Length: 123
Image (cartoon, rainbow, N blue to C red; front, top):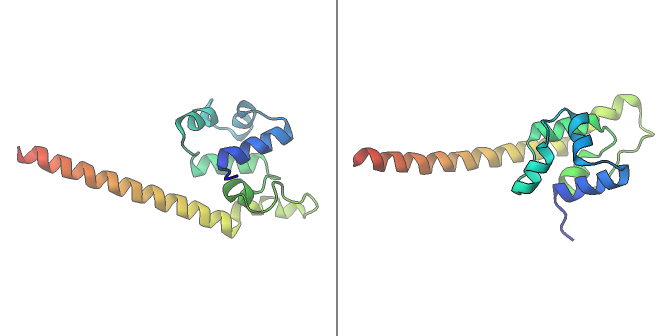
């Protein structure tokens, strides 16, 4: 089965007995942010994902983003390692890749809009 981000988030919520609203409130996201993005078939922003991971430090960032590893970070780790998931190199690489994809998409949109603008100016 090919799970996506929301499938994994749902699995975590089921294990913890949470719903979209509870995660949204605890993470400090705008009301309905998770549900709206889910319905639109879009992912959450990097900032929203980071807020969720900060609110739920036991949630493994690598697992949430890619499906690799375990759902939860071993709670036997030292307290100072709790926030390491936010700075894990795989997590950072995922953020960079996501931002690069966004930039590429925006560059394509700009190119199309520029072409349309030039055609309208020539008329």
